[in-house]
Amino acid sequence: MGKIKTHKATAKRFSVTKSGKVKLNHTNRRHKLGLKTAKRKRQLRKAGFLSESMAPTVRTLLPR
Image (tube, rainbow, N blue to C red; front, side, top):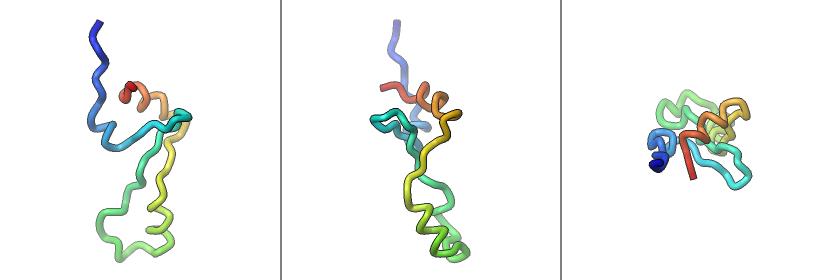
């Protein structure tokens, strides 16, 4: 049986933490930043976590 390949597009967007949570970077931080408030931009800096219902899908695409 062959090895499972990593889905590269998913690997660039998500990472799996040691506890198994799926970590992601927020969107809307690339352009048109003058229209967004400082509070909104500051909150988008922190990494987010994928919901538990979507996480198994991403984990299957990211084998260890």
